[in-house]
Image (cartoon, rainbow, N blue to C red):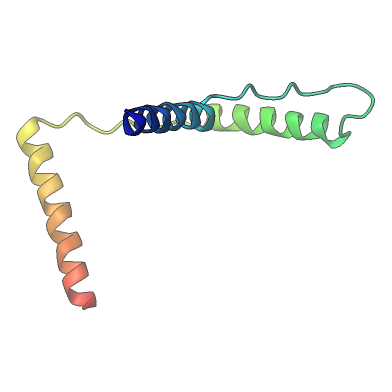
Length: 89
C-alpha cells in the first residue's frame, strides 16, 4: 500500500511541476512614466515611418498557376536543391 501512495504522490508532484513550468506568465506593463527611456519615442517614430515606406512600395503579384504547373515548379526546385547538395559532397 505504501508503494501505491508513493507512486500517486510522485505522479501528483510531476503534474504540479508540469503546470508550474508551463503556465503563462503575464507580460509586465510598459512604464511610460518619468523613468521611461527617452529613446523609445524616437524609435516608435522611426518604426512608423518604416511601415509607411513598406506600404508605399508596390508588390508585384505572381501570376496564378494551375496545380500541374505549380507541381512542376516545386519539383524542379526540389531537384535543383538535391543536385546542389549532391555536388557539395
